[in-house]
Image 1 (spheres, rainbow, N blue to C red):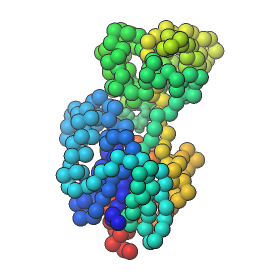
Image 2: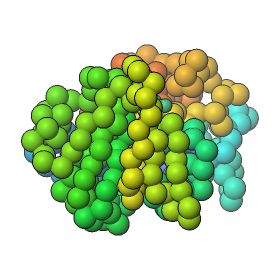
Image 3: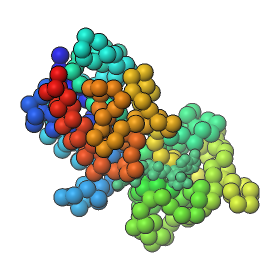
Length: 302
Ligand code: NAP
């Protein structure tokens, strides 16, 4: 029986593990893929205090080593179910059933898809959801980025230094992402902004060859020939496996306030899968600290 099982080894989950270990609680962190979460794909973090520039990979590795160094255990197993039983929780993975007094859900979110025909088939054949992972395949080629948040802007900035031409396609005429990133993109000589437009068709043979883009204002359709399409249209929370135990909002985020308490006693939430106003690295790590502190208080009250 662990004191706390943390589900998800992104910044929120690993920070929760650090705080729980510093409170001398036993902690198991379960992670389906690899530590780091979404931030792993960010080439350059510039808005987290202390380091002016650090890659998502370096940041994640440092936090992982810090949590391990404090004695947090990690298991690379996907949590598929939580059961409330015998006065605690059982977290079920394909390999094991782990027991804990309290659980912290730090499952983050997964890539939102455009929902176009052939989108899944073309992943790795011209479609990518991660510019830092796949950008290098598109050196001196033509690519498009779709989206208007910081991910899309940062992807476009990264790709502008590699690709010959970058189209940045956004469904509105103003961006959700930071103005600093927009200004930097405007200084690049090889970025064309395509506003008020949706990607409406993927044209391919074995690989993606072109996309059709429909102007939302006049309905005109433009074909853009390209080698790669980077889709950065946000994320969807990964909470559905736990919806039997905790209350979610209409968008699938866990309903919880700043204290990170869910509707189930002993289950806490931290990071991007929580319903909140600002999803940033700094708010994810803050949630991790809060969720672990509240989980420790809960265990002390048992
Ligand atoms: P986001 O901020 O939710 O932006 C998603 C973008 O995709 C929006 O511009 C949205 O358009 C567009 N979109 C959504 N669905 C679409 C669809 N079906 N078709 C076309 N466009 C669609 O997502 P994100 O950029 O991944 O960022 C997630 C969070 O992480 C944000 O809080 C962001 O600031 C943060 N982040 C931070 C950093 C950093 O701090 N360095 C880096 C990356 C991300 P509308 O604007 O019209 O809704």
